[in-house]
Image (tube, rainbow, N blue to C red; front, side, top):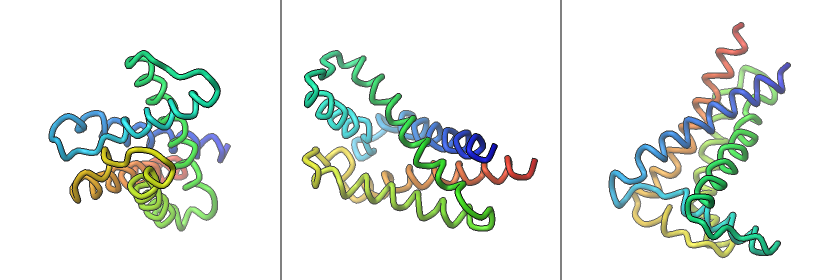
Length: 146
């Protein structure tokens, strides 16, 4: 049952991250565009198998689904271990994911500009991932009280 709670909480965090990103991405030129990095990464992987997605709409949908699924799995790890350290694990996990999102794209051959354009863009990218992790922690704490 713990695995199910962790996955449910991880999905809540991933959903919160994506709602935040999708809701704000077009409000200012400095907003992070995590979706663009994800689309490029997904198409690079698919291209290596000869299966790139050429439709913009289908690429967006596939990237969003992949993003929610992978972030849900990642955030679900926050629930592993003692309940006493859920918030600490959430903070470390969120900051790690956010810093990775800012620092890794160029190192793996992706365009990092959508998440590193300005200092504000970088800080918001990290904040988005931290927010998703904290939502996961809140949901885990609520589920563990029941």
